[in-house]
Image (cartoon, rainbow, N blue to C red):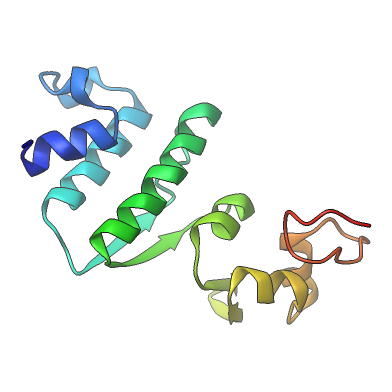
Amino acid sequence: MPNASQEAARILELDGLLKRRPRELSGGQRQRVAMGRAIVRDPAVFLFDEPLSNLDAKLRVQMRLELQQLHRRLKTTSLYVTHDQVEAMTLAQRVMVMNKGIAEQIGTPVEVYEKPASRLCGELYRQPGNEPAGRPGQRRR
């Protein structure tokens, strides 16, 4: 059975990079190493600040799935800061939309999408001028 470091490296696709020094890693690889360090410490709460921002699109999609699975498996609270609405909608159980340090709205992604508390909240989760078409991912009839 792999140890925590090996499992974190596998999840984050760092297996082939374990012998490299930090200066030999790209920005995205360094970000994944930082996530791995947090994972192996087994904290009660994770704080992620734009953890996927330096990753290419393909790896970002894959890492979103891995983060969801990791969250379910570890059953820990995660605070996740992002400017990417897709990440917020797909990863969050609850979302807080902030504007200049003030919470504009707190709710589930569906609540924020369907009943935005302000114009800002509405514009973040749908195209300006479009009426909501139901839940995210639902087709219009």
